Image (tube, rainbow, N blue to C red):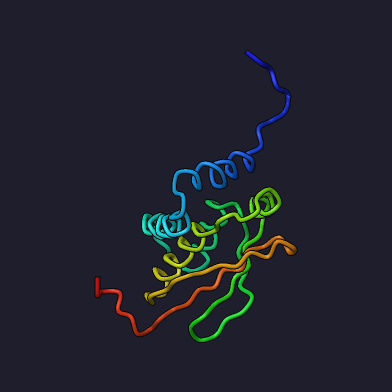
Length: 143
C-alpha cells in the first residue's frame, strides 16, 4: 500500500465528479439534467425559511449565497466560496445548473410562488450570479 502524507482535497474530488464525469455522461443535456436534478434534491428537503434554504445551500454545495439585488419578481444572488473558486480556476465552462435548480425549487417551497433560475459566471470576480425569477400568475397546483 502506498503511503501518502498529503490529505485528500475534497474540492478536487467534487470538482472531478462535477466537471469531468457528469459532462461525459450527460453530454449535451448536462445543464438541463443537472438543473432538474437540483430541483429534485430540493424537493427531498423541507425549508421553512429562506435562511434554512441558504444554510442547506452552504452545507450541500460548499458555498456562500448573498442577495445583491431584488425587484418585485426577480432576485439576484452571488454564489461564492472555495468550491466555486476551484471550479472556476480549473474549468473553462463549469456548470452551476445543479445549484440554480436547487435554489429555484427551494425558493418556490418557501414562498409558494413558481420560480425558475438562470446563472452567469464571473471568472474575474470568482463568483456565479444566480437570477431567480418568480411568476405569481402560475398556479403550483396545475401539474
